[in-house]
Image: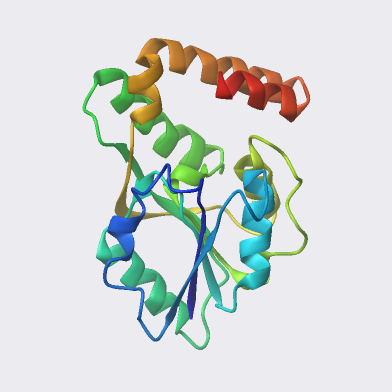
Length: 206
């Protein structure tokens, strides 16, 4: 079984619904929505969703991302293999806007972050074999996907499957592409300097 865990935000992000049209009643798929009324931070929602799941393959599906049917069919096929390898990874990131800076961000995320550094952000839609889960993620407000990747990377390097994860550029359009890009770099620096994630999250929300 493939378990799809989605840390929703009480209806604000519904882009993920396009991925699930044909899978709500699929016999080899379970879909688990965890919203902010059940757990406040995204890490908590992902932890809760994992512990509710029963599948051999887990997909953490970003709420502002949509995947093609073939991507989910591929994960279902992997989950049904008897002697499957222990793998994890994500899908090729792309924004739903063609601004040159957004294309660069996607390129950097796919090539530098995933292929070279082995870090998969949630908007790539992280999938993993259940056997990789050794301990709950740190209850961070931001960068919980980085923490998860660092743990999984101890077992193996991530796989980037050849399906596009189309992510909404809503936040970039709302705040301005340059402004949001600069803020993201400031947040990464704050994470590197071990500034409390609650403070970084407050900056992100502003």
